Image (tube, helix red, strand yellow):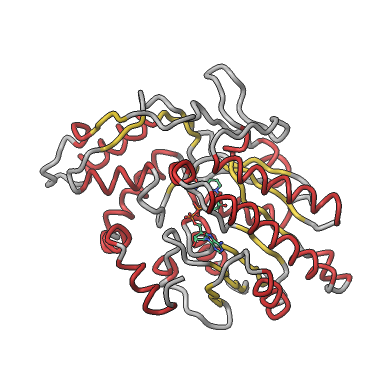
Length: 355
Ligand code: NAD
């Protein structure tokens, strides 16, 4: 295993990836993260800043910094997670999404291109740039439509999805025009430990435990294809090791569930796992709210290319993954409390200053 330059490694998926990568031994990670509201170093509290792991607070839009770091650490690969990732926030304020997701990816690609040019022949053969993207670039499906596959035309519907689609196109162009050995992954909705409680599953767990309303958009029949985050991390690892340059791989767990089904299952799990809760049955907390503008109806992923070419399989079923996730949030109430109270942001301000 090699030294990997990770962007956005203090976020939900990036931190799970770093923990998984380092736990296999021998690999090294440099983590460049701006520590926005979504970046939380507590996710990586179990990792020591030492020869195997280095954290750098910084912005992927800072061309000079990115170039310096690549020249200093000479990674064998770049895995690009850093992004603004929440659809609702992209509707309220799209600017940050265009800046980080498009300009930031552009900056990183330019630095990667320059760095790639400085490598020796053997190093160039091994070097990979993995761009972590979303199934939301494909738009929405009706109930009868087949699942998204790698040739599905792009049709993004939210500012978030449009910014990710733009970044995917940039990566593709850098492969074809400049020969950068990059690979794109488009993954479905993730869930699991360390997910910021603005996203559906952790929001519902956090609210239910406090007896707060469980807000469901519209009729709750929007379908998403859920994947346990560690399965996503393993898919990225497989792509890093064995993926073909210039290819796109869809990643998904084949777990299509409506939002209402997800919340109903979560409430049943909480009823069972927190028998002393005074808010049981938790389903009574559900509150239907006005639908999100332009809300995509259904996403579904066809991951057969990743499975047949790279031998990847999702290991966690939705039922066991959801149970593990609820267990994690119950066992880590201090993490949830820090995140919801903003305490970790105060810590960031004290340690790194306000940026
Ligand atoms: P997240 O919001 O939890 O984390 C994003 C991280 O990026 C944070 O640590 C944040 O501080 C950092 N960041 C933001 N702007 C930055 C900048 N300008 N410079 C450096 N760091 C910056 O996101 P996530 O859910 O972990 O998603 C990671 C990636 O995976 C994103 O690219 C997202 O589009 C993609 N993805 C997410 C999902 C999902 O379900 N969460 C599914 C498919 C793909």
